[in-house]
Amino acid sequence: MLGIPGISCYFLLKKLVGKIGADTVESVLSIFVLSVLSYAASDLFFWVSHFITWLPWGKTADSFGSVNSLFAESPKLAEKAVLLATFFSVPVAWLLSWFHHKKVWNRFSQWLGISRRFGDEDLFVLLLDGGANQERWYVVRDHKEDLSYYGAIVFWSDEGPDRELIMADVDVFSNQGEAARLYSCKSMYICRNRDDISIELDPAPPSAKLEANERPTEDPSASEPV
Image (cartoon, one colour):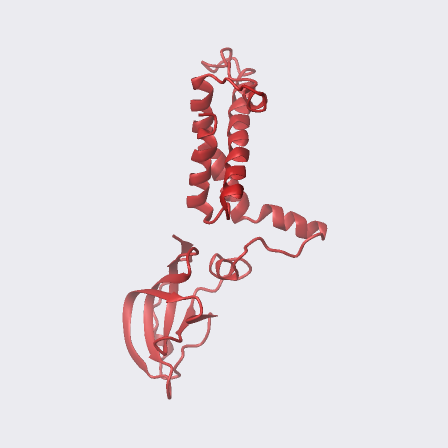
């Protein structure tokens, strides 16, 4: 029961940032730490509220000490404290997701000169999640079908052995000969093994026959993970 806030925060955070907890041990430890943070957020909120007299619950906050209770041999928390901590697991997940997306820890470590890592374990994530690049147009080379797709990547997945992409305003080219354009479409779903595709950022179209005025004038949507 005491782990419910951590479990809630764990699954919310997994939806927001993707892979967390590579194995069972890491997942259990993550849930434990997230539980502590959720109880701490609940305690902090009511501790601050205790000094704001005009709040209806300002003088009745009774959830103090829940973090210390987690480390007791026989922790006995009221159901109210667990429910409140579960409620606060949502903003905790949002805050941790913001830290992850902004690479706060890694940027601070780079500023101190103690690390050169940017934070993503997979460079595919770094490439499409923005990182140091703001390119909007891509050439995705499909080595399996010997085709190239020129357009905007608007959605992508970062889990599993396959790379899933949804592209918009796509021109499809053959990789053979003069790379003639075969056809165009407004959107396209691509699912390939990670070794079957390569991605080029903001390149020239695969064929010189494609004139600039044939491209759509509106900017495509920024890349977003799904």
